[in-house]
Image (cartoon, rainbow, N blue to C red; front, side, top):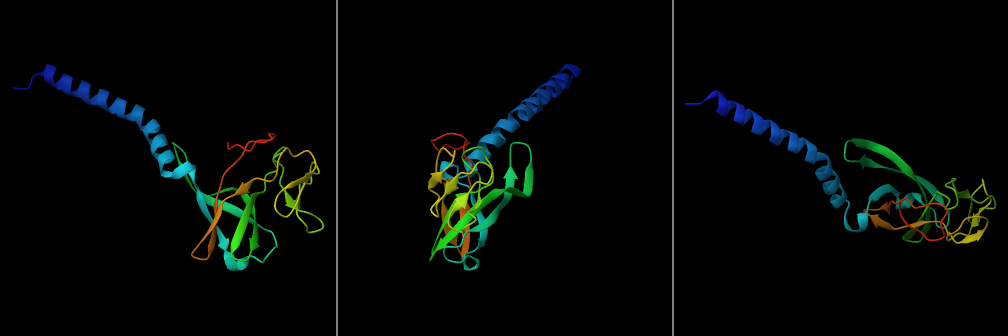
Length: 167
């Protein structure tokens, strides 16, 4: 025979279990999402077809991917941009964010290399710092070509420091 006390006990234990589960869900989702990124937190993002790049001519591409945090998933979020430079079958990628203060780096007016129009930092074709207040070279990003499409391991870096470190 079920007594009222037994029913109250079951309801109380069930409620406590549900509350504990709800409290633990966000940290578990955060840990699982971090683990899914792969070794070193890799985040390979597809950009454009290799055939659309001309040798030695920088091309700016948007970095668009699904963005997930512990609470929500944003489909096709624009995460940033990168410069792609093709040399035969290989492609180099550089962040468009200036390491000085985060301005947007553009192709130099003479077509040779890159420059930050805000604070006059300049970089050569390989992203090496030539002049200006930028504390380091342009931030290179890992690339690979999969199925004829250039993929970038997209990352963000701290600004204003000589040593390159991820955010």
